[in-house]
Image (tube, rainbow, N blue to C red; front, side):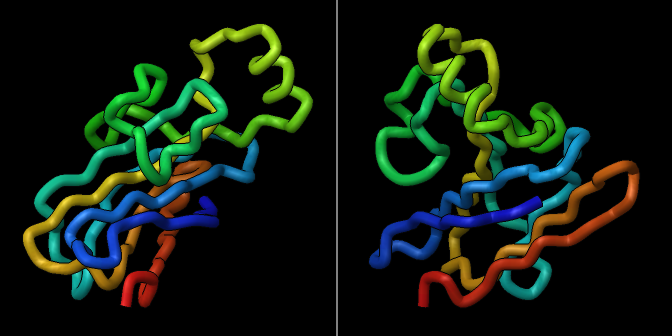
Length: 133
């Protein structure tokens, strides 16, 4: 699992959206997301976008083609090729998830994110820190 981008409000470090992608060959099962020193956040959601709008930045709530789910309800599928994405955009089909992300809410500022997941049934961890300081 790869996380190329993060978004959040520099004045409010209690909400972060993290774009994630799967550069592998099989789906990823996200098991758990903890923050800071292993704390469970107030809420974590996995998002899927069925258009070119990434699960990042503004307009996520208003976009009918981006949906958020509890962890375990939505897998992180392998990244599509550029050709496959272009074909989906041209055909205007909206049943395939193109972009994925994680949205995290907490009462206290979020300074570090640790995502635990399984790929080929093997446990892995992705850690991001220092992004909103």
